[in-house]
Length: 321
Ligand code: SF4
Ligand code: SF4
Image 1 (cartoon, rainbow, N blue to C red):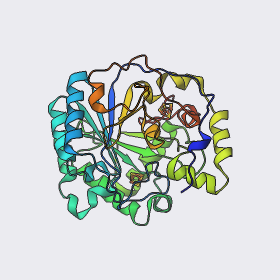
Image 2 (cartoon, protein in one colour; image 1 turned 135 degrees about the vertical axis):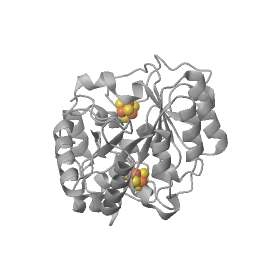
Image 3 (spheres, rainbow, N blue to C red; image 1 turned 90 degrees about the vertical axis):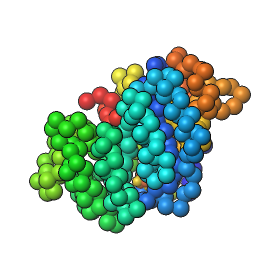
């Protein structure tokens, strides 16, 4: 795989600082039942990295100590970590809002029976990848059969109340472009998604989140191999919008890797660009209990233009609508 890291530093991206910590985004490991070509964590069925019990307990201690409002679970497929249900139960018990970044197909895996019911019982918000409402596009990006399995999973979630008015069970879908383009306007695309999924499959959901592809990891490698890296970086820079700088997700989120080390965001985690709290080394989740992040400088690179381009991009979708 080709590495874009050497092209991301130095950068002329404006310096940014942290605000109040609101979300802990925890990567439970790189194991995944899929192997998508845009995956920025290079997850797949053969990866063995998984967060262990000691680190999960440190995450729980931090949630309590710092009164962090949100726990955002990612992977890989986070549900494939054997301690997933333990972590969710304990976090919900502490009054934390839990989000599961779910690839949908995991809900249809034979060894994951009862997973959707568990998520509903715990009131977990499901944030699910569905990069298009058309079968050909989803299967091309995420693998053969992924569309049908995703539709079955969405119907299962709807039957449990997800996405249904008044149920309190939130279901958001995530769109990312097929290639080296910026996402279209989030609201207009949401209308199309809702109409198409309802008419074709009787599926409903709450929100569509549009996310810009980052020029790193597997997608970055594809860009380099096709000679599209420089034009894509230029597109991100030409589309820079200063308004988005105030709400980039790293201001209020900390990303935790499967070993418990901290980063300003998931992308920095993949680039191995640690959170700059300790000048002499890496900061661990157990260190954060005693530390204060507000006002600290955020570690930036050229990829940060992916967050500020056009309507902006974050784990919660577009920044300006
Ligand atoms: S489902 Fe998500 S984590 Fe798994 S390979 Fe695809 S993009 Fe990566
Ligand atoms: S890439 Fe990460 S550090 Fe850079 S602006 Fe986006 S969220 Fe912040």
